[in-house]
Length: 103
View 1 (cartoon, rainbow, N blue to C red):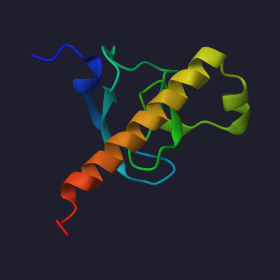
View 2: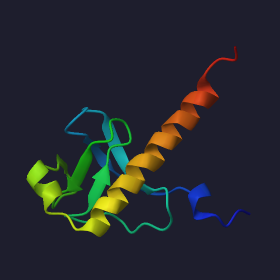
View 3: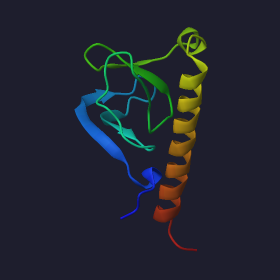
């Protein structure tokens, strides 16, 4: 068993919703960096398809963060978002590499 939290993706199934940016279906919330509580209203997220920065509403509906919202975030939240976006980029590149036909 690997104890590296980056090697374990924890997620919660959620009702189907759509990213307000790319319109792709989103039905789970996950963490690439360790334990994750079930999302609540006001929590931040990142679309795994288009990397849009999102927030959960009162019924866990997703909305895009405006520039004003982003400007109001604390440095700690901005760093967490940046780390999440980078991890998703690395994950996407890894998956793409695994799915590409051999040359």
